[in-house]
Length: 277
Image (cartoon, rainbow, N blue to C red; front, side, top):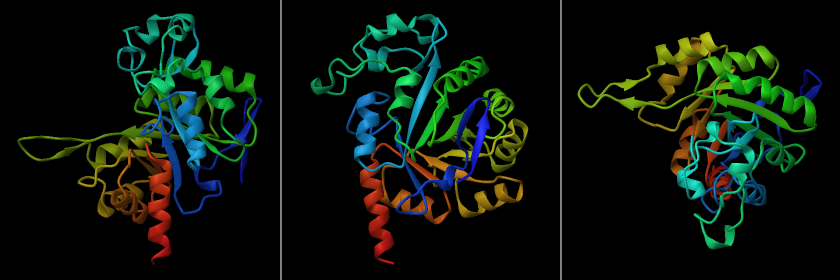
């Protein structure tokens, strides 16, 4: 394992370095979010119980400069009433019930802070940090990591925003940072975008270490990936994969990580497939 230093922070940098039962790292998407309310401590703890190698959480900056774990820009879907995260304080957000939408057994779950999520990552595991705010969140993240001084875990920072990826590579030059993309199909021409040329250009311009790609089998083919590798792509991980056939497909293409709402289910499917070879 290769240790690096981010200011006073020491962490593991190589995405594929942790011990797994297969060649792919299995990451719980927002935790074990098929079974528990996404982006809650309950969901992240359940992901570990289900044998995940890592967890992925989404992070926004609040009005009072705190980092909280939530996917959407506001709390309507998961918090019961609408608060815009960037315009709300941590105390206002923490007053919401963040779990009962998934089931009564999760009543009382609160929106977690970055520090709280980091605290439930066991030694030797992976923490995938998706930054939903823009570059303004990066110096706050750096300060949090330097304050908390995590040891013995692996970090991967991901973002859809090119400028946020660039900012992460400036502040954390030795950390792994992936640029994320989904794909849309033109209904008239049938062409999917972005194509590999645009993906390659954005990876280069953002200085990303790899690609986090939507699990679209129509787009992400062996030829698509081969052209990206020729253009300089170092590695890729794929999201959000909940079907065994899709997991096996992306495993065959060499994904370093598979992000799923169902970590135990997908791990068992891949291990079973491996044992039958």
